[in-house]
Length: 248
Image (cartoon, rainbow, N blue to C red; front, side):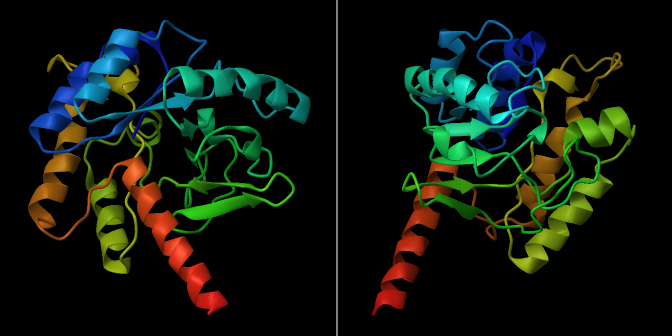
């Protein structure tokens, strides 16, 4: 998936989609509704080409979870964008989270957590490489939390200044060995698509291309590449079957 944090990232979303398309992949692009102009045309083109759209917070200003009052106020507007954009996917800016509050959102799936990532502002990992249900018994609502499980590109290539994809490959191999879910959250905001020398806070898009090529070659015919909605449907069926077995 791609959290799109800035206008630059938004304006290069189709460039990134074309790269993925050429390698046989599809992803989800999560846009910030009230930080920059989000083009309806780009959203519709992405959907028409088999990509998914999600809502990435509201303003990306670090205040969404500052208090429950702020969250519930902003949840009203987030829900309107979910409706207007015809999506039920949400991702949390900076991976801030209060899972018990998020039932106020009309999202059926979300990414606001990670298995482990000590460099995040809120570094309390959920310690699983699988999706999991978050249920609010008071509101009788639930959603599927889908944590990312590979380090974010910003951490690796902007903060740590890594020059290879070795860490991505090592973690991916470990997840494959465990039969888990590999979810990477990368940002077109920090990718250099021109092929020239990357500028400040940019890394070569070739790193991301290399990750996709590694998946295709090393794990050919061994992996399932679902959409977020596909994962939601699969997990819903598994969950329903488990309940039926327990009731039998």
